[in-house]
Length: 631
Image (cartoon, rainbow, N blue to C red):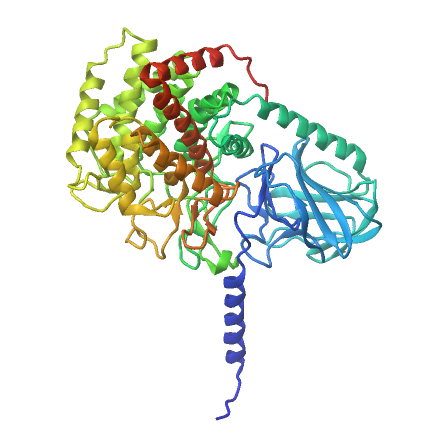
């Protein structure tokens, strides 16, 4: 049977082809490295394409975004083959890659550097084998606004007052509307440079000194390597702790000390569904984890910077009313959808802003006081402002005004969450500990009473199998229950601790991975999300805490072998594919903390409780008197 083809048929086919192309666009999330200058962030792939760049600030509108759409802004080398070599350091100061063009190998060095009031993406190339012509294409903007057009002099003006300049040595650029093509003559033993500047006052006609830029990047690598060598890494998988420090530093907005949860937006937790969110903001949880993990790993100066940010968002010692702020400590923009972006694997909507600004999260409040307590345990000092913040947090947790909250998973429909009470207990328990050691004359009876009542309420909710439900009166399991063991509400050898861990793993594990709650349930969104990486590391720490050290080490080994070095938010247990925003700071810092817990558990197993305390005291003294870092 023949059919006539109308204009609407053509339109429908075009839409279908576009949807198919969007669904097929799924660059490997974990196969990136993170570049940062402390103000802006970018992601680079193994083939040298920079497919994500938010600048001049970490929460600025993306300028390069082909990560989310094949037609998005990108900085790419044309017609190069897969890399011959590339460093898998997840957050290097300088990304080193060797690509091929035909039989010729080409060394590449990429970095973000601060240039006056702006930032520049520096791209250096040289040949290893012989001369070769290399073409670079650059398209900017177009995400939530018009795409930029290049002038003949290599200047592009974008919305928001961003001016882009491109300077080249060893080649020349030609503008073709939205595309700037640069042809470089690449030879052995001499670097060629392409420098993309944002608001840098750079002269596009001035040829950059490629060799001087290479020396500058080498000095940057040396400075970062020196800082990393001074870290005190655990014996178990020290590379995971080192990676956590690197990612934590790269995701820190240096002007304020804010930690962005992740430098990306709208990478999906369930491809093709609606679980896409903007993480380019700082959560109280992540700032607090920054304090504790930097302190645990011997980076007290870093811990002090994150603690300073907590004071910024808690003026006069009053805990922040919102669990999330922007990188300057201000309110987060309202969540909204961005049209015209295909989405990773066709996952829409693409969102900017975040809807968690008015939520209540007692779990985060507990992590804040926990972070301060770890800072003190590792040699930090308790000043009056920090003590005032601890007292205010404990007073807030001690109130009898129990209410529904959104909790650590930021549920859109607040519930009477068990995890909220675990967070209350954590804030009170650590405040009591801090008072005992640093402010012994502080009246603590109200805090002790509230702590014990909160603990009793949580333990009364234990289910017949030994697990804890997500909500009071419910039966659905939740991985947040592991916080009761990880943070010591239930301690070894209390048999309830072991039963809680066993029940939670039995309900939620998939191989070495762990879901945060049963996937596919009704949490306000569609699609089946992956296993949640931070709670996968909680499982390691919880097993170690209840004396199952061999199981904990085996699980840690399996996770480290299966997971890439750059950790996203989630992983598909069946395929191993990374999902969600990347890198997620929370995933990295929980990995580092799990390795510290393994070290402590191994010492307890070998030397007993007295030996563990002796190790902790000796560690405190070493960290207390260690020279500080300069950033």
